[in-house]
Image (cartoon, rainbow, N blue to C red; front, side, top):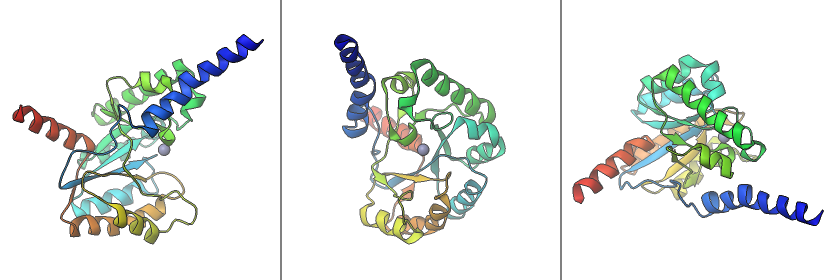
Amino acid sequence: MIPVVLALVVSFVVTMVMPVVLFHLLGVGVIKRVCASSSVCLTFDDGPDPRFTPVFLDILQAYGAKATFFCLGEKVLRYPDLARRIREEGHEIGLHGFDHRHPWADPPWRAMKAIGTSTSVVRNITGQEPRLYRPPWGFWSLWNWLATRGLRRVMWSLPGRDWVRNATPESVVEHIAKSLKPGDVVLLHDGGRYSGITAEALPGLLEIIKERGLRTAAVSEIIVASNRVSTSDA
Ligand SMILES: [Zn+2]
């Protein structure tokens, strides 16, 4: 009995706890910030959502801003026109799993299937090959790590705290204004109950970015530009 319990504990630590410590807490092998002296990356999770994503897109367009949307495969399938609009307006679509199940609830085959299906859905509907992945809740397991080989794993350096209880558009703007630095990857949401708050905060955030002489860019745009610089420097 004891060896069985011990084996289960070791397996849980290796497949669930260690990936969270390594990739989430220590940031090993993930992108938390980008190498940019004049840009920041706004990222929006959990969409596309017909209540909020169109509002986000209108505001981004009005400011000439570019962002990265970490979409759920299931929602891209349900709202293909919205996913296409994100792409057509020059934003990037990254993967955020298929249905936002907690990564610890997925056995290996389901983790593989969630990434494979979401990749095909985004590719077939938008024509864009997804290059980025951010796990639901920022949680890692060994299985979603292995399933996302070949993708850039993106976390964040600045959480917008739009999901906390008592969040208001003002609190989101104030929190980001206080901490924003060039190269930050800002975590916000365009899907879910709090996304109305984020939508109201977005013009204020874009004003602050503009006032500080910064620009917004999609995550891959910066990565490609940084690689080009380092290649030409070599
Ligand atoms: Zn999420």
